[in-house]
Length: 321
Image 1 (tube, rainbow, N blue to C red):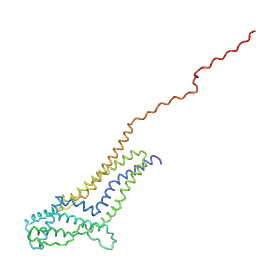
Image 2: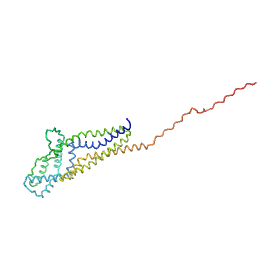
Image 3: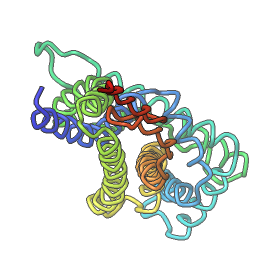
Image 4: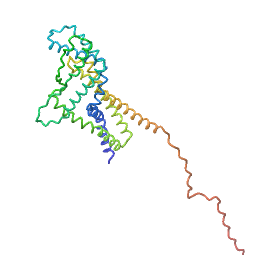
């Protein structure tokens, strides 16, 4: 194969490698990290001790209990002085082991419901239904805590099994298609990145330069992935409704993307390390002095004079007359 063609093919394969690296990491994270219920619950478990999440739970659950009490106990309007008291009670409840158990259970139930909906292969004969979750067990635990604290009328707080929508039906069809694409891409994109890198380096005329280019492209992909996560965090929080607590949402976003952030920094560090190591080895090879070979003895020439010149020939004796 001509060197120019080899260089062109190598450059194209290495460019594909640098493109596949960040997208492959993103697809693998979505396909294997977010779709595993056990990993998801483990990732979300530390948020039960996050102050912003506790405050959001205290405000949301406290207001829901107050609203339900006003509707079913015919106490309208409910005095505003009760609201801070209920929030303090729920805030105290978030520091108990029962809340951590309810938090893990709620996340597991929600994740299972969403995952079943995304993996459901609909043949088009049935209508797409929204994904709903029942959080009545959490309200029941709060009710029991209020009763143990001797809160008036706590025992009469209703525990309704209300279906809370966590995924609208209108978005389920598009999300289901995207989820199937991610499952396929999460497996093939990393393999394609490795294959293109190996083929591009093997075809390169100057393989050390190809290794450096691949390493720098990998580092660039990791940096772009970290930047995309930071930009995505800002855009996600900006698109949230006004009634959603932004600090709690930011804590959830950071927890979900913690593995992906670690992968992006690993790609950046690994790429820079390989590039620097390869360049340093090449620099040392160029600076290393060439080994001196011993001088060869001169070959004898064909016209060399003999060591002892030949004796002169004797003149013939003339006969006497």
